Length: 94
Image (cartoon, rainbow, N blue to C red; front, top):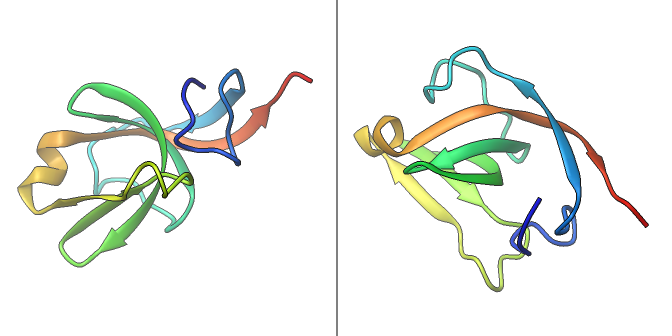
């Protein structure tokens, strides 16, 4: 993990494990609202919470004061997002 967008849940230097989806296109795999996923947005890798919204998907950072939620609607979802899998474990060095 790099950056501070998912603090305090995930911190820079943490290692995550995710359950990989065979199909990366949104809409194929069931998304659990509020769960954390490994994704790409327009090719940039991210680790974020996802949630459904009317007509699309919300991409949510835990550090919401610095990183507002992003909303992807309609065709923009399939064009911009790839969902690689749901994060199931985090390891943090002390």
